[in-house]
Image (cartoon, rainbow, N blue to C red; front, side):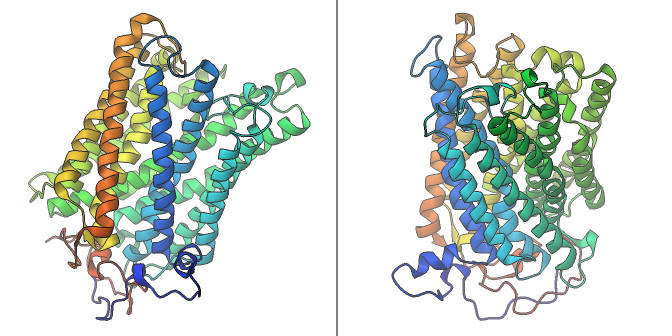
Length: 541
């Protein structure tokens, strides 16, 4: 793909000499770094911790739902746990997960440059993200009870109860600022720091997906900031913007929240699609099918995502014409998604398939994504949407499109780039076992919820009639299996990051993008001599 590789001198970014003194010099060298690769690993460390926290919270809720009645907690504790689970998994894990970890680590390398446009801003965004999480956790302590109005705040309920809403508002506000900073960094990096010869249509698809997601971060997140400011003002000064008893309009908040939250789904999905678009050509040893239509489809998804927020407000009283328009866009946005999936299938067709762990995750992502998309089409139908709104069906769909897409793409990415990041190889046998257990657990957890919701079981309730127990029991069993699979994967990766077989091969998978042309693990300075791009990004011919 390029005419230049790194020089023979290789100082790994993992072993870079610290400029600090004293016993904690290595710690300081990490938490004060401006190296995009180290910042990516800082995000990975924190996101892994809170993924485990959120998963345990989800498991506790599922254990409560194994049988009717109060089993291990009461209704108030269940609501608090459900709210904290949603906030942590959405704002602290899913939204920043792929962009902050793999985007930070690989975007500059795949563009042929040595760092992001604003390295210090990159580090600041990580600190702001950490402070935001701390504020969210503080909501569970204090004079009032834990915050329990749901991760969407459910205004006006969220501002009328005696709960610690302000720490949550401040925490999500700070995470939003971090997201905006990350988006600005990525946009400027893509525009100004591409290697010589890398035109727009010679850029790999993962950077394209990050670029599209970054525009959503930049344009949609300020709307969330406005909504959070209104909640803060209403909670502290009772100015009457959202409280109907003071002449406010809760529907206004719903509009503002979903104007952000619906496009935010594509902040998660677009990088996931970009990752799969990297894995499939590599393990098919074949040029991506219809590269340009894939690029256009990714950008179209980002654009159309701004016009479907009303899909989440079908029971809020907005007009029929508006609902019809939102329904139209909800159906139209599936077209570019189908285009991308067909291009993946076209890439695999007659390819030289190397069927190994990252490929398993990529193919299973397509399966999960198709289920999410087909059930999403049902929400595009207003009659069906009204019927299953706020039921277990909606929760199952949400987890397939968000948790399913992000987690399967994340697992595919970490197994794909693991030897490049750490310079070691994981145990493939245990990696495959972990994949199988995770895949079975995920589908056993969420597939029964579609039927439960279709039968009328509401979401976010800690109790239910006895007739719903078989489905809930199956779903809870799936949660236990999923947690077991996640533990196998995490333990395998952590152990082999330190003690695994060394992988000195720059390109163990036979990839064609620039990260496979530099040393393993990457040097502290990506390129001694910046590359000159001469070929297309997936030139397997």
